Length: 399
Image (tube, rainbow, N blue to C red; front, top):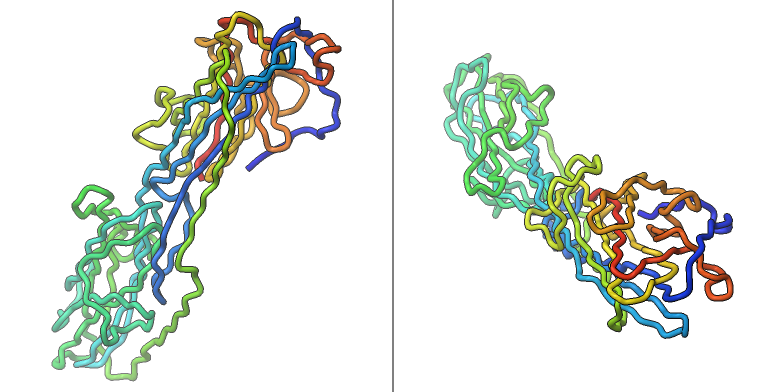
């Protein structure tokens, strides 16, 4: 997402520069992601959050020229944010049914992996519910309802565990056999347990949210408690149909390329995690943090420019872009003219200080001087003297 705070034709402030070099730092951003989704009639996948493992890549290029018009360029290292996995799942809801003695009752549930990566689920069904019952079923079994018919059909498997991709949805059916000797008014309580592994290799209690109002009969997650009441009256059996309208495969890829020539200005691109999106880095700035950053958390991008030459660089303009799979955090621009300085906040608006967002680009203007009008009449960047650094930061929220 790019934000422009000012009309492009508003007058720009000018800063005076001595003669020498000029350069503009241009960041090119590349985000690479590929997600493959298997879709059946009742198993759909729609990505709501950026997939775990997605790499958000960011690099910068600096170009500049001397007073004689000779052009140079250099490229920074590539900084990478790997999207961390967020575990989340739901199961629902508690079901009430009437049934005749000897009838097989089918209880339908929906299990959803609402996280951004694959997860393993353990399923089980037992007799009994909170508040008690008066009868046990003759038999209980869980089936994966692949066609969404609300009852097990030929070829649909009995299951005790499932692996679901990010945002994958499956229909489940519990088949409960009412004893032929049951009498009207008796009740059978049935508890479906669904537990996610959350990367631990073991079922985690309470890891699947119960979508029943207030958590259902037991007010606990990872369980659905359903009740069958025995009756001699006619019992309606619901029929459910499902139609697949999803595409089978989705993917995204963007790539930027640049031609690079060595020169005296060097760039370093890094990133830090900001889980609360409050502007405070919770890790050191690194080129590729091992822990990753989860959707909903923020990444703070940092560019440090250094003039390693023997002459000043003029019209220094640092430009960066907001990559795919992330959204710019309004008001997060920070800048300072040193290596070890603490960047201070600058506004998003154009023309009032050293930072702004214009036409989809995050811009920082280094220095306070203005180049001679005959040399650089239209530019507004400043000076980076030999050995000096400039540090620029901005924040994005991972989608």
